[in-house]
Amino acid sequence: MRTLGYAVLSLLSREDLSGYDLKRMMERPLGYFWSAKHSQIYPELARLEEDGYVTHRVVEQRGKPDKKVFGITAEGREALKAWVTEPPAGRAARDELVLKAYSVWLAEPGAAAALFEEQGRRHEEQLKQYEEIEAWMEKNWGESPGRMGFEDFASYAALRRGIGFERDYAGWCRWVAAGLKERQSG
Image (spheres, rainbow, N blue to C red):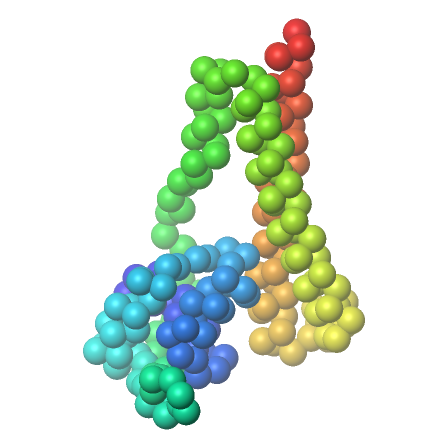
């Protein structure tokens, strides 16, 4: 099974969801560390259903087309449970901004610094959103992971990684921009 399949099963293990809801959940909470396009989710759901990992039911809606709501099967839950403790596959390092940083020596320093400052601001904005969620979680679930429910702890753990990523990335962007500005003025 592809990793996207496990991401879908991870969401469905918590609650039944439509394809639209899955896409929304891929943005948050999975957006801290995983993303998928709408066009990827439906084919993955079809594969998962064909393999017996999910089923669907049709929910009638007034004034809108009926929607399919998917749920994880016992077989899907077992596959997810086994996958969770397997070592992850090698991580593909594909980051366009890092690639740009590698070739930034070719660019005009001021324009390049502006790009990295803007990207840093975007990561700072995302960090602020994550920190607001963290504050809500800690207020409602307690600051001690041992006091949280197991599902809540899992969500909190993923969020904490998202916070660390955004904080580090924003700092790196500021550092690159500062270095570019030094070269511009020097």
